[in-house]
View (tube, one colour):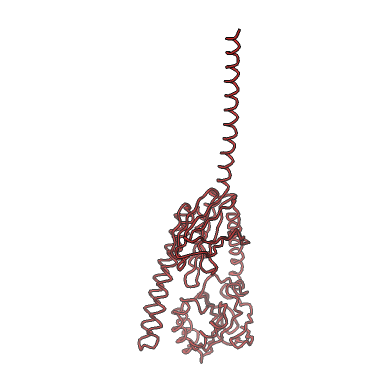
Length: 405
């Protein structure tokens, strides 16, 4: 009997131990699952800023219509810092110091552990990033931008150095040619980048990059790249708010193109142009219709537009050649800073009518004339009927010679 009793007790103990082990395993499983789930739904950013000690580092999320302050921390005595925060979807983030121009853009996904290393003196320009493939693509874009900025600064330095030289025109011509070559290579770089990385949010950043204040890519010439990004992001991140926002922009561009086609019909050769009233550099309103009786070149330009600057010497020659024969220029600037516009008009001694509302691409004339790039020119006759559009400087000279002989 005693033997049976002990055997029975041993069996019960084994069952209890197995039950206990099973319960412990269940608890550990749920704890691990919970920790894993928490990790998957979090983003961790750790970094080191050399020569930093107790400096504040700020983290923001950039969403389509808002900027969200996530957190701020101070670096320790070794310049190290870290952020851990919940995240449900891929998004843009910006690390910046107290000086907001010193910033690093990241594209992070849930579950990523991102490592950023930089220097307090060159934060945002010289840095490396690990653990985030999309953020490395952003770094590739920034490296290209910084390289081209150095080239532009060097060209500006050369121009200033020889500004009083007797052969400054020749030097400027060579600098302009170099600029156009750099701009062409830069455009090819961004096209190649988008083709290779169209499923990354970094491709949107590439699409809206500028070079010397001019958009590198635009919907008129490069709309295929907009569509490529749109379809790729729809496949990669169909539920992302950034994908939805970009898709909305694509629809707006398509609607604008359709609207532009209607405007272009109104601006067909032989049609009369609608009137324009804008202020000159002295603040006086000047109507386009006040120039009736003259052949008028409506010239859309800006002081920041290098191609506009490049053709200006020839445009001056044409103006001086034909102004006494009933020719005038109505120059509409898409500048946004009065000081820069006025300075350029006075420095270049532009004698023709110069007007602007200083609202950049938001000017009503952009939509009125369906302007998608500058320089852009429309030649009208004495009754303000369109003779030709988007005419080159060479063709303009030939055309005026023909009608004003």
